[in-house]
Image (cartoon, rainbow, N blue to C red; front, side, top):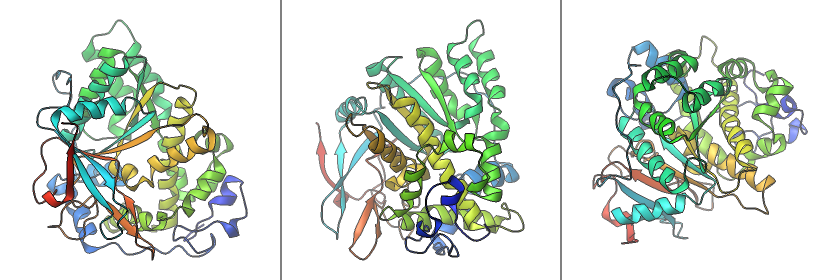
Length: 420
């Protein structure tokens, strides 16, 4: 399948000549062409590792960061679980305006309003928290949000979904939370070894410990979401046709919806702006081998997005009243074209009568990872596409560990402060 997309026959669904490529108009058998990423986006990714700025790329996780020796897996002494959003954190709601020239503005929450926002998030079925894997502030903020939701939902009303852990290791998560007879320190070491953290995730384990400790202390279930490396690498090498029937059913239960998702308005823009710059980066670094292929890279990425959403939805679909907080890299969350949109599609196709509420939160977003055109530009709230001036919303909320700088969120971007 070199240089081509052919995921319809691979899944045993539909006529491959009618399945659009990610560019939105070409047939599936047409050559796959990638819009060249901007110099800004490549420059940002190129220096991410060296400078320690926010990054959330799986390939960089498994390869380039390890090559540069920038990872640490040290287990730190215990930190206390956070109780509620800190006095310094600041939250904004991204609000559509209906004006193509200025499609989104921000509604700011006061510190008291952030508590009201947690009340609202506690009514959701799924809340996506888009993280930068290498940023401690993001993980501390996740713990604050999860702790606040756990107070509202109780241990039986909350589930934490983890991109960081692959499906085959669910038993290790269960043993960590619900197992008896081991000290916390022993349990943390057993979990680290049991999920093969150093080989399959590699981002600093210590930064995830506050969330893990909160789950263990409160008895909140942890759910493994990620595609097993063995499956991911097989698809990355040979395409989606390499999936077995069992793997298709596990990761891509809604085969027709999976294929039709590529027809979403704006999807090709998202792919060329978010997904494929990652391909260019990894190909440039030599991480993808001597014969990198964008179609195979894309096949692995969409399996990754679809698989995580499918696993989470299958768990949640018959559990009304529960809330799952999903911890994923920001690229899977932004613009609703990764895991978030796929979760909403699965819910709409299966639970239209019941309703299934999904919200997305980007943690500590920067101008670069919101695809601002220039380094000095403020955070971008949307991604424009098409000839009609349409724009995709970056997320439902932006949550900062401390008030953002005036250059990142300019006063004119904030329409009002709510829930005083």
